[in-house]
Length: 258
Ligand code: DAK
Image (cartoon, rainbow, N blue to C red; front, side, top):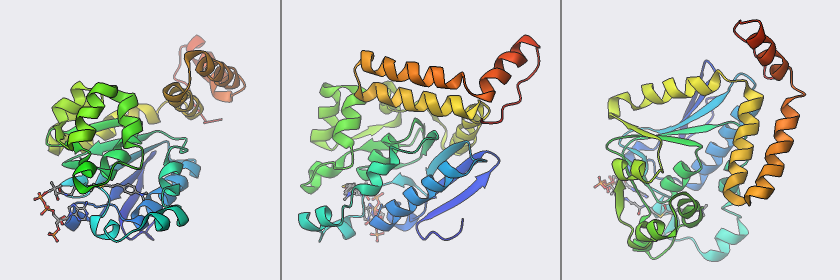
């Protein structure tokens, strides 16, 4: 995959990597970058050899938000007519796990992109925040919703209304990120963890991701109906038969993703 302008991509083993790549503007996210990210995510989602997707940023930021220069002259009608949020909304439809590795700034749209990830690791120099309020706007790609669901109204209001930046330690304490690492170890440790997911039978991983995300939006009763359907469905997979057979034969399972 070499036909992207604002992201770098590579597949290594079972992992598909996307690196935001506008380091001279701290990976500020312009419209084309969003389209490229979604395009690549969809390609990885369809590519059978890719099991898990890793999202990172090049340089001293994950992403310092949407590109302010590009946004400065945009009008509400343009945003509506060009349906500029379409690509963002589709990120939530990716079936494979997306693991974010954040170093440096993850602000505004950059933080929103990080919050679209299923697991988040960060360097201990990472800084998260929603500076939109300081620009006379507000988060528009899920910030008020995803952060609030994750850490609760009281704490979310604090960060959303002030635009203050939180440290990686604070983000870990609030349950926004899974773990922090020294910057030089971030990618290596993220890959090490991601590998553990890539080794699991991919249909189970897919069904678990889907059901877990439902828990964010549904009542427990509704979510459990969904969980039960996915649970039953997995019993029609070859990997379920293989996994249980291998256990009984005391051997390593040979999963095929079917
Ligand atoms: N946009 C454009 N350029 C940016 C940028 C940004 N968001 N952030 C940084 N840069 C550029 C700087 O202008 C500077 O460029 P040069 O002057 O070198 O040409 C270069 O990156 C390095 O930045 P600094 O010199 O400022 O570096 P510092 O270390 O001093 O400061 C900083 C780092 C991250 C604290 C600072 O750069 C900063 O405050 N950046 C802006 C943060 C911010 O307000 N972000 C935007 C939030 S609003 C949407 C979806 C989502 C959104 C909107 C629409 N749709 C789908 C329609 C989201 C909105 C937002 O994210």
